[in-house]
Image 1 (tube, rainbow, N blue to C red):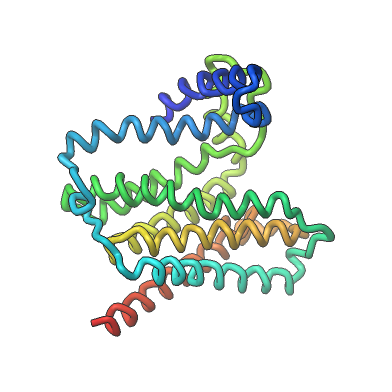
Image 2: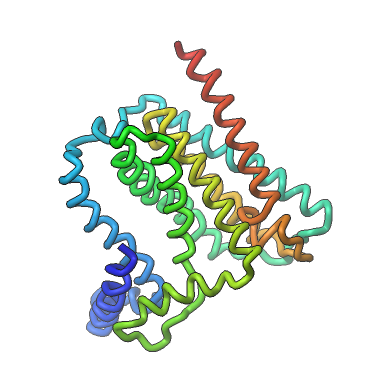
Length: 280
């Protein structure tokens, strides 16, 4: 999937630049190569999953152990609150301890992009990781192995999302350069372990929510809350001191975020227990 995405990325980039140069979708000219690299990975995943679905004899949601959820709105809202509230409470404590301080200016343009990402990314990633990939793996009958594999895959893929412009001159090998840069950018072993551990735990929580509810809506809410909460906090404050391994570059990396995520997991399972019991 990653290799196919790396090959596809230059083609997408050159096609977009050509369209923009001819006055068609001119807004595409402002996007750098990394944007197209990330989209190429998603396209490659979608293309390669189709034959896998056919081989696995998946013909509908039931085959992926998914069912209609009439309480989807409540699950999304619960997920948002269960992830955002502990995260921002942790952030408030870190401000009180002078690890973070408030910025003088709030970047509203970046906040608008954050809102879009908080909606689009959970929908796409939950449908892919917890919907299709986990659904196919659950068909093997080995639930815990399926949860482990998809969570590790989820964590590893997120290291391919580098934020820097790495390919000023785009060639056929630019996609592979982006892959190398994505992993090389996390040069500190402590940071690498902390980031992977937190992403892996978050992946486990999202997978558990999906399995318990036979639906994606709770995991979508949780995912959206983590993106929105962490992103908003980063726009509001700046870090004053480095406290590795307790805390990394944001509220989703480090031992403290691991603890906050574990708390969310406990709260989620407790809420599900009493909410489903009350429903019955």
